Length: 494
Image (cartoon, rainbow, N blue to C red; front, top):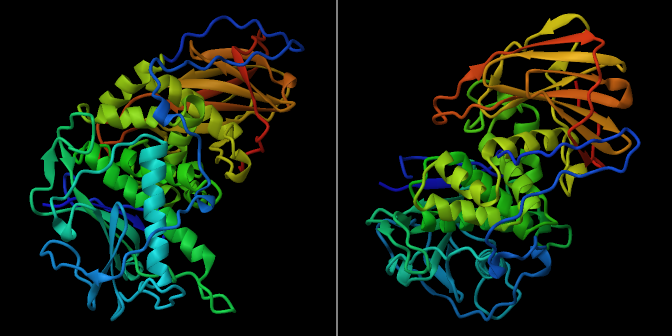
């Protein structure tokens, strides 16, 4: 059986799985006076950092390599590899074989401005692939994918160009049928257990949503789409090299979508997927999306923002360490082992991440949509949402009053925090004991974030929990436990 991961057209990043393949850090007491100097909550540091993985995000459009292009040769016919609609040719680079045709429905654009013998589009694909190799492996320190033992003609990684956008795919990565699980990856210094060799397929032109420029040149937007997809799919190939059988599907897609932003920071293609998280923040962390309502369709891909939160707080290295733990550990066990190295826990990270969604506390947060509100709280009334909150999901409630108030949460497995916004800062009041009193007149705006801290068993067994929240006037005002800058905050939509 083969394993198949893809980037679907309707989101620009989507996937289909065809087989089974495939501390919170303890807080010190922060005695914050209203007018005192602001104190930022400290960020735990990693215990181990490798120099090879210390590079920051890259603007790949400025780094696409010039290649020494070999003349075309014929592509070999492998029984379990894609067959194109016409005579198949190969463009070889140092690390890749790009298979394409000039005939039939899979034909690539024929434009050619060099004497290489290859169409310009194929050369651009080759440049995108070689850049993805450099950025992912040489710059960020990921292990190369394993060899395929000569499938496609040699051990270079094989990329096939086909008309797949008509099938609602922008690209996919597929394991091979001839014993693709090889165990240990000989291209990696680590010892893998289920390393799997693969090939990937990109669209033959990416012109589904684009047209040629008036001067007859190829549209740059279509090339950017191809480049983002190449980075996404090649990262799936890398992931298969670590463990082709990791059961948390969302981690596959969230990581590959996140890597697009790491490699092509100025393209910002993944931002279009964020509505799947921001419109439905109370959906289960493991959920693919679309099962209950359309707002979270393709949530696995929008969850790249969780990876972005981690990498901005701890560096690119933390996601790499996660996949290194995935070699031996499955699901949340890999998360626990990774975050322990950073002196934190998944629950601690989820709390901080949930607040960050509200305040848009990300480097490019001004580009992101605002999170959806579940509703406003009313004085002297109980509030309960109609659909509860799924595991490792969150509800966002507004407090439309500026006065001393007391907020009470009645729920099991839930944690709530009050977030006050004032003068470009966010003030955090955790409700550790299920209730808190504060003076919301200190804030320009006040919100409550209700988080389901339970973990789902798997994506098919996500559970929703109800909660009840009461807002009463008065109470002895408590001070926030920590605060963070919130320069990107804008009021959420109702």
